[in-house]
Image (cartoon, rainbow, N blue to C red):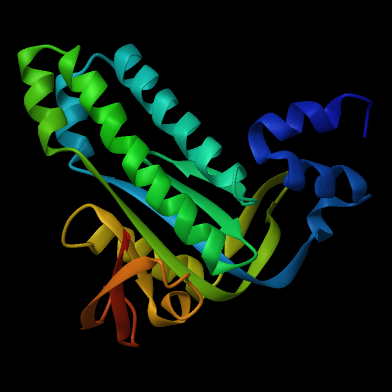
Length: 216
């Protein structure tokens, strides 16, 4: 690829994904199955907020959230994979750093929400009061690489852990950090974990033992 392309791609794919893409002569073939911990963050009651805010203001709020996400993930060795509307996906080599990133992200998000709520109109303040962030963590084998066709490819993560993390965040009873038993088993004992029993995420056949993580 041309000089400078990697730097441009890094703004969209992240540094690691951009480096892998530029090093491969045929991006369509880029990809591998890896063991990883997947982190998916999803804003709860975001649609209500979107109804109250002007689009350009809403874009600024999302930009602030995305910056928090990048900072929390990359500070602990993770790789940001993509932003999906009001959600975001990242991957880590191990569950421990992923759990720390998730807890910090949720804490920082609540502070961000408070700042925006204080500076907003009455209608938006009520919407911010209901806004929260749920984070799902799951680990296992994923495919990390390019998918697509016709010359248009997307660097993404695929696999059951991705689906589980997304479902945990989307179907969480409230905001906070939620994880599977496999993630809990590798998280530092200093992090408190509340057992919530077995759940069956929508669209999935297997039941999952669910935990909620809290900073000890």
